Image 1 (tube, rainbow, N blue to C red):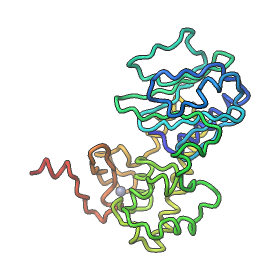
Image 2: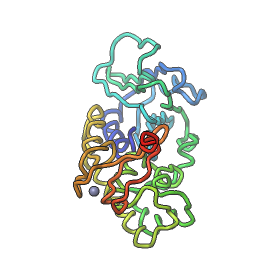
Image 3: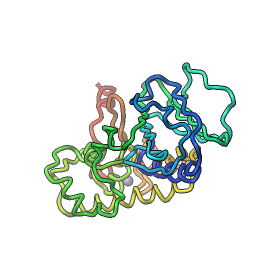
Length: 286
Ligand SMILES: [Zn+2]
C-alpha cells in the first residue's frame, strides 16, 4: 500500500506530467470505485490540470477548481501511460478501475489487485468534502510538526503506539509499513502504550518518525510511478522482512500476525530480546 512517501513521489511525478495538460476523458471502469456522483466524472473533461497535491495518503488533482481525489488503499496503484490504448477499456474482472486520458494520448490508469475492493475516487469542488480528508490529522512532514506538537497529540492517547501512529485522524500518511520502520528506528516495541512514553521517548520517536519519512521521500523523489513500489520495498529495514537479518544488530526479524495484516520487528532492538506473543505462532505450538 502506498503511504506518505510514495504518494508524495506520485504527486511530484504527476505535477511534472499533468500540469498544463487537458483531461479529455475520465472513464470509471470498475463500478465500485467512484464514491461521488455529483459532479459526474465527465465534468472534468475539457479542463486543464492546474495542480497536484497530497493530503495524507490521498492524491488530489486540481483541474481548474474541480478535484479528482484518489485513495489508493491497500492494493491500488497508478500506472502512467505514455500512450493509452486506442479502444475503450472493457469492464470486467481485470484490475483496471479508472482511466484518465489527456489531449496528447498520454494518461494514467488506476488499478486495484485482489478481490477486496477499497480503491476510492471522488470528484469534488473542495478536497475537504472527502470525509477521509476532512478527518485527517496534521501532516508529519509539515514545518509545524515539531516535538511539542507531537507530544500534544500523544497526550491522553491510550492505545498501543503502533495503532496510534497508523490512525489517520491522529497523524496523516503513516500506514503499516512505515509505522514498523519508525518503531524499529526508535528501538521501541509496537505494543508499548502511548500513555507510558516518557518525554525522552517522545523525543526519540519524533526524530525517528521525521527521519524515516524524510529519508523515504528523498529516496522516492524522481522515481517514475512504475518503479515506486520496488523502491519502497528496497528501502524498508524490517517491514515485510520476517526471517531476514536485522540490518542494525543481525538478529532475525520476527513477525506478529493478525487476521488481515502483520507487523515485523526486531526483538533485540525493540523489545529487550523478548519475542512478542503471536496468535498464529501460539496456535501452531498447541
Ligand atoms: Zn535489531
